[in-house]
Length: 233
Length: 316
Ligand SMILES: Nc1ncnc2c1ncn2[C@@H]1O[C@H](COP(=O)(O)OP(=O)(O)O)[C@@H](O)[C@H]1O
Ligand SMILES: [Mg+2]
Image (cartoon, rainbow over all chains, first blue to last red; front, side):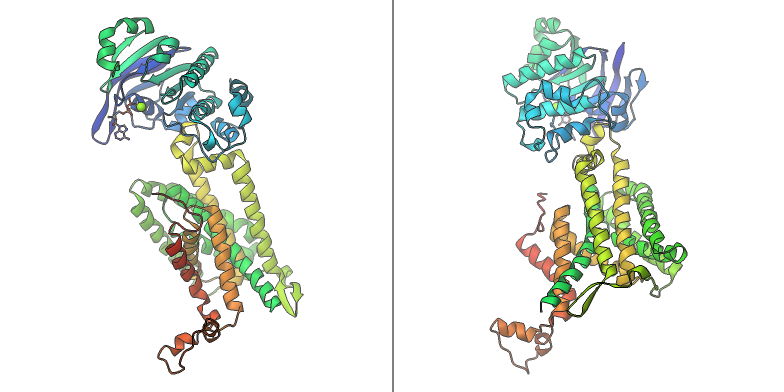
């Protein structure tokens, strides 16, 4: 089943035409990566899907057209989004940050606060300290956990490994696999190939506001020309 | 001397808490919109007038309950159908809108209730002295004002810092987009905050109306002082607004209570002057006379020494 289907998606910042007909899809239970160099429009793509940037074109989620809905309505349809700026609320405690992710009063989804604490003992021991004092890696974990509290069926995660130490990147890969194992689809935005090759079933490469390559980790490993033209720096 | 001090402190507390009822709502709304709501004190005036009319029919307590609800509902409607639409046109348009609203409300009040001062009285059950000290009486109604104000602030504090709704509001004010992405309806939250802020101003009007008199200029009188307070406290800071409200309330109250004149003060400072000096009128002013100017003086001092206000730390 197709969870998310993006067809001929265009987006603008003022007059500049950033997305120029993006096409891709994510199936239920899949981990799909959206790769590309800085500035090619990956973040704009997820922001447009989430309704933060005005979409032109079609975005279907679970068969329903969601282009034109507001971000909070899209979140309620079951789409989760972890932005690249790790926007935790610095003055609220770790626990309060997690509570913010809940859409209702109750924890009745796939995830509970205790789940998060048992996966990340670091967060558990600092449950009542302000989120602002956490390290970059811990903030990234908190940000992902917070979105999971809203029980999304598909989660879009923008550059979770950016600027983090290899050990933390490893932890993130483990969490992503745990998320997928609970039946949540993942759209992973990355610049580096490292974890994307390891955990995704399919991947797309973007260049200049369009998808320029679609394949699997093994096919991309062989496509030296694609990597040279669109990925390597 | 000490009884003068005690009474001045209590009266300053009453004024300060009353000012904070307006300043707190204004601060919350400022944090949300990024502009000062010039019509905020007009909602305070509406509270007093509605309470005056309602209390004439069903008594003071009915007014205390319903007037703030009506004012809050009007506030929510103003946000939903006025400010939210104007917001797209930028801050200047929003400012002009709230300016216009303040004039409109003042005109409407004069149209429906007339220009004269209304005989809005505190209820009879408060017509006794709560206590008297050295022959001076402290009225029960003033005690009641202190009680109501503190009860409301305690309630608000608990809701804002302990409840899930409070957490969502705090986060929505500082990070609206992130909160929306998590599935919360931020415009609706803002409408509720605006409604609550104006209702709070309405409550202040209901309980201050009988003491500070209910007349069409009451919004202007208090409005400018409330603006000064939020600037002194630091724009957007609730603790700052509380400190500044109490500071201004106490300062004015002490100044009014003291009958120290400028000559005594100046002599104390070792400055002597000539009776025939052309500025003699200035020298002979006494503190109660300059009490209304004190908040402005405080504002200037704070802006000189800490331009962001007492608790403000805005970088932009
Ligand atoms: N808020 C913005 N306003 C104007 N241009 C922007 C904005 N955000 C991104 N851009 C531009 O859009 C292009 C795509 O950016 P982005 O989607 O962030 O790329 P990526 O996430 O792939 O690095 C870039 O050229 C960037 O400069
Ligand atoms: Mg990006």
